[in-house]
Image (cartoon, rainbow, N blue to C red; front, top):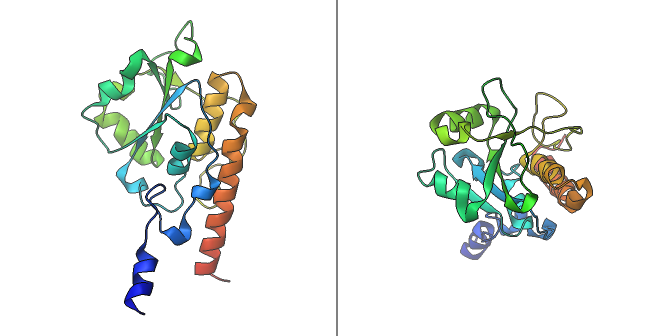
Length: 201
């Protein structure tokens, strides 16, 4: 292997943070949302080739992606611009009830934890302010198209799928985020083809 070919192989895309040969930027479908989006990503997900949060962030203009397990400036992230934060997370008996009346979408911020189920529980535990947020539970959850990552149930969605469904639910317009799901389908096909090349039958 020559030095130039080694350099090309290591070249990274500054936008999606992947090798240029595996860049996913061509799947980006720029969208704007009335609800603000904050993605809190666990560090173990950053370099995971199957992770969909980066594509979600690149598609949604104005969204913010922060990496960490704890977030010292969490209060500022949650309440910036006077938005009302709502956590996308299953409701539990001790969780804060959904806001009544629900503020208009332009005043809301959807907070999404990008992590495995176990790591998301850890993030909740070490960030008590997240536990105190009102929660949004998804309704009419479809079967996930996330076939490149193992799930315990058909309706366990990727971060991108869950956020698209939640935003549509909060804005009462489920079709508005269909381009996100189309981008996700292309991303999944690309990753499936890549892993097939690595593990031919």
